[in-house]
Length: 350
Image 1 (cartoon, rainbow, N blue to C red):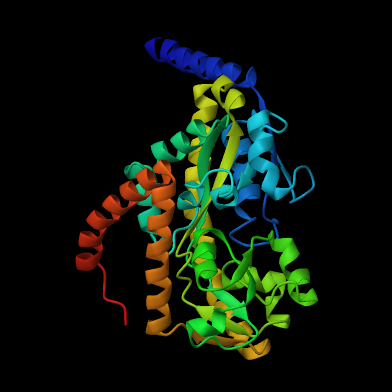
Image 2: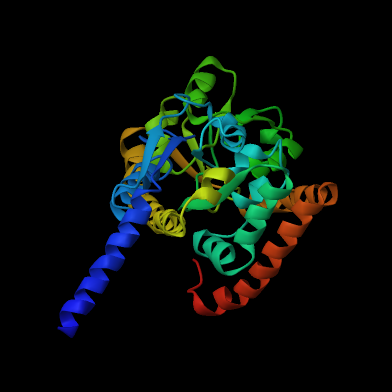
């Protein structure tokens, strides 16, 4: 009899929880900044949508809209904050013109690799600072890191770059804080969405570009127009992508739904990182064997120039914006501690 009563109590609890969730259905209409055809950039979010539906028992649905279909990529933050849409998938680096510190939550030159970035976000002060950034800038959004990729290539060029002088006068698509480094070195930079880069190269509006990892760049066809591909990606050793949810929608959601969404995005961080790491070698081989791409490594001298210039940019940005300074100091303090671990525990690189 006791077993029957216990079973009935458990069943009643489960039914009550299900009823609560069912009464609180959410439809997230989610425009994205990156095509779902781009592995590691756009592919994570359809998988998140699928998992949200499964884990919530169909009480959370996410409808994904390809770039430009609902909201242009560079308008996602404003649209989510205003309630025009209730969610969006993008990267914080796109908001540099609105929030100077935003690129620090996207990719940092000579900055943390993926594992270290996630450690700072989840077990340092990264997440609280990330949300604080949007709050103090007046944006009504909840932010969740929802994908991360490892290093990118650092550029596609039509000629060899052997010295800083070879960069002067170039017109180049470049992202985030790395773009400010390139500007100091005499490059005219512009930030174009992925779908606009190939036409700009083809028409001569830009001479060179960076965008992402080899398997992603391959989908955009840069190798058809420019053949020199440079490594390492000093400007983006890891890149974080975010799910933004309208603040009112988030606050009205049940605790169960909040937990489901948060954990779906945490899972996606792992999944996107693994996907990106699994597919790059095939793209590199294809570039060399079939596409006539010439892979180049930056010389130690050029990397030193990039790093020195980045340190100048970081100091200028910190002096100009107190919150940028606050985030950078916290990140650097975390990294100082991590370096002790990294230098002792990991094998030296050849």
